[in-house]
Length: 228
Image 1 (cartoon, one colour):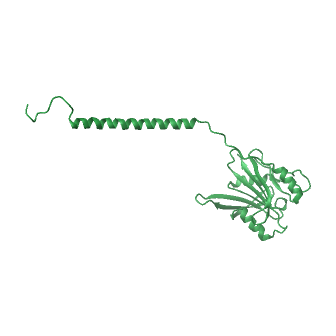
Image 2 (cartoon, helix red, strand yellow):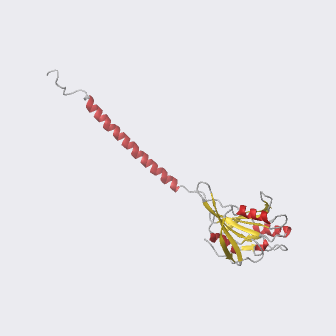
Image 3 (tube, rainbow, N blue to C red):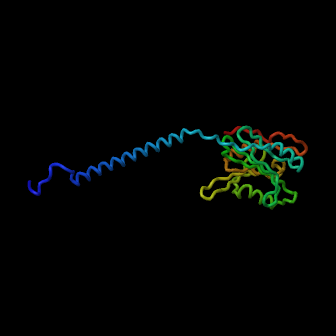
């Protein structure tokens, strides 16, 4: 056998060894990827099947009791809303706002999930609150929304306003405003929230006034209709 002949036995050539190593490496990576995919699917399935705690609803406050007491004490025929089961009151206060204007304010959340929120706010002209202060108060309550006509609900004329709120994702903040002799109880009244006009009109129809001389609510100013 000459010096140029290849041996018939012994260790594999470097080229053959490299080829087998490359093929073996591809097999390891393929197995690793398949294992990762299977693990990801299992984890997602486990998370999807895990029981989630029920969303806790905000506590309901007794607005009727507070309103009846304050109506007698302050002499204001305060409004509340007969909400039924769809909405529930979650906050109530009669206090001066940041500009010193006495304000009756009730917040209502929508069931289930408290996913919508409407504010009922009232103030009374006089008692040191002039026309300019009332106009500024209405602007604050309505987020300086632009006027969009009027609507009549249960015999009361309401002015519609819409404001754009939110920096990155603008949202519509709508309001209904009643003032003057036809306003509920003679109080300037604002219903507002990031809701549809239909929701605000439902609230306007469901308003109920608290008498200033008794602790029982008067009949509602309009007939409420159920909403989803």
